[in-house]
Length: 203
DNA sequence: CCGGCGATGGTCT
DNA sequence: GACCATCGCCGGC
Image 1 (cartoon, helix red, strand yellow):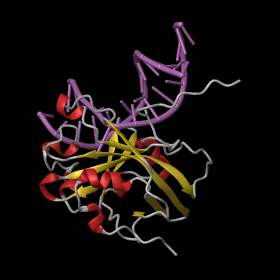
Image 2: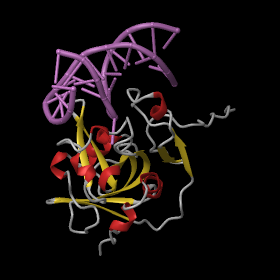
Image 3: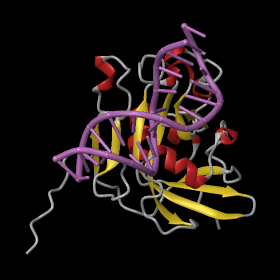
């Protein structure tokens, strides 16, 4: 029996709220001839749409960005540096055009490798899940979709936050805003942690 | 362990 | 024609 997808109302909220709420949720990836792959989200970034100078939606509904101006709960996938894909969940419809970038996850089931960091980074995540622009626009709230999102049976994780990664081109206002959220104690988080635990001296 | 850099192609001006 | 929400290799310490 498949887990029940999160409803559209989950995604139809402020993008920052959706981003935080996605931590600990499960991504279910189903493709013909491949076992179902399941991953638990541990790192995300909120992109606030038209006004956000770091967002692809900042120039309005261009061909690439127009999916973010549509209904929430759909998938936005783009190609970066000519070789990697990144996946986003559309969070808020209409003019706001919010989206949440999924930056890292923990493998739960269905992966060929045992590497616990194989999903640690937005490009690595899409590569391991086989997600490309071909999946762009799919409905994340249907159990029949090639990709959907569901609750996990787990307590709410401890959450930390920081500035977003790789957006130095955005103005001073936006590049410092703490719109990256991650599970504080997960080893699968990519990039820097706010307070890196120091290795205790070993005897 | 850390910083620098190149790969590679779509998107928008 | 410039830019880019990345990754992993390579060399220096």
